[in-house]
Image 1: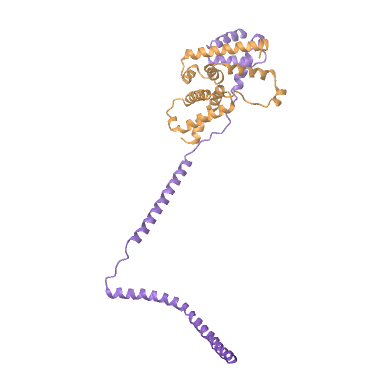
Image 2: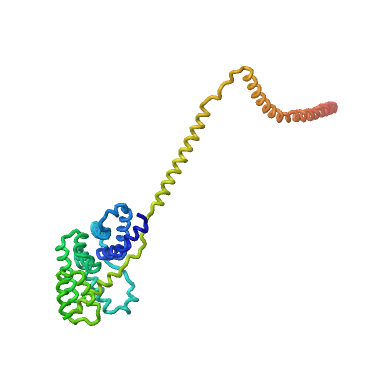
Length: 169
Length: 163
């Protein structure tokens, strides 16, 4: 497998890998590192790649595991990943409209969800995978995926209604 | 009618029972401007999902090719060749020193060889002796200085006579 062939197979889903990593690790940099690691692992095992049935699903599983490993190792070192992306607020203050603000809120609500539910929401509502595909990627049962999805969606909706009605932040 | 349908879909959505097509329907609905006021809550949710899809990975992927690998082996090979070269070179030297140069069997030939080498030695010796020849001129110098002695003798005689 040449480099261009590899890139052709990897390009379509590299953004998905990145977004999944970001959903779990939150920080941009950590997510970029994780994505790079996943892609390099794929590259170093490129001979085996042809034998995988679904490279995309395989890499998503790999990403999930890698991110869990990262989170765990950081906790083991008694170091918490700083869950923040630093932005220059000066320029954005004027531009901030309510719509953007509430988008941020959805993101923050999703951050508070348990990891499993975050994964499911990311894979289903953002990447729009089949329930079966998700079950395979996460090594879960179909029904478990559905339950996690339903719980996550309900939590998000409840929290959104709260902030919407009372402006609680 | 549409609103009813959407509400129904939303309920299914929250139970995780919607298909991808139905979810696409929901997304399309919430992208519109006019949304029923009591469903306004969902708008940011679907907008967020849409916005999140645009997040892309922009960093390069540093793929290492086999080229570097080949170069590293080349250096190994070069070092090996060098080492072999040194080894053979040094072993050759050792053999020439250890081995004797052989003996000449024919006595006449041996005699000639010896004469030749002795001549060589004497020639270089003579060269050394030629430089020593300067010492002779030193002797002549000394001989001229001998006249001073004679002068002294004569002055001595003169002084003796005076006394």
